[in-house]
Length: 300
Image (tube, rainbow, N blue to C red; front, top):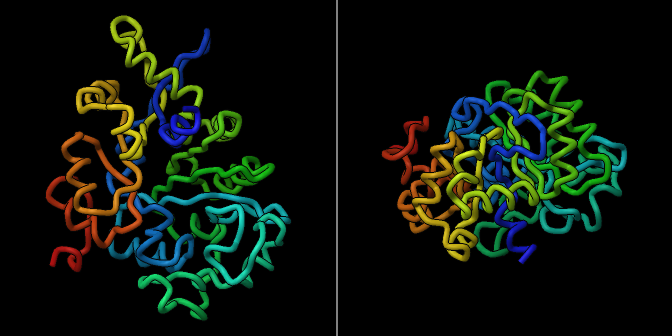
């Protein structure tokens, strides 16, 4: 049960009042969050977490939110990488945290990417490398980002330092599975948008299910509720539930939607936006429904 609820609340930014603490004031979420978000830049479309992928995505879908996972190298540099190991995306094996930035940058981040189940690897040897947090913030000064802090020892401090140095605090949404990491992120970057962690998300859902005064007195302080389709179905989260959350000023985002059926489900549910690994498939389906900026090439 805890595992399922952790997935459900991987990135839920909704307001909470805990004890006697004053709730944070919500941001104008539509200035932070695009309804169209690119999960790891489009992980099933191009090699994930590379500058080249983010650049191509930004050119095709300007205004989209760019999502990334953050870990530390052995010398304490925040880099964009989802897995704890390097095995799935590069020619190397073992934990990324065991390598210095120079060693990580020597790896081929397009090595294992394939569109045909491993028959061909069109991005091998093309010079793609794992991007650093600093690189993407500098490369896309007008973009909004969703950064998830992974369980990488000491990750929050260096991550926050890079974001502050780039002057990017007010254009990022921050997430983590772990309550302690989220507490650190909120403290280090109070002017960013923040995601609910496991514990606070449970309390939010309990208030919603209790209804009445419990829900009426619930005061949002954050911006986004992000849900996976499988969890929505498992926990019977209805369009009425979504509408009630939205009435609190909360943006509801679904993760990770890659098919026409997924998009239809999202629209039926009444969610505000999504993250996708297949922007090439999903973007054309959303043009008439969401206020997103797409290139002419995607209108053909």
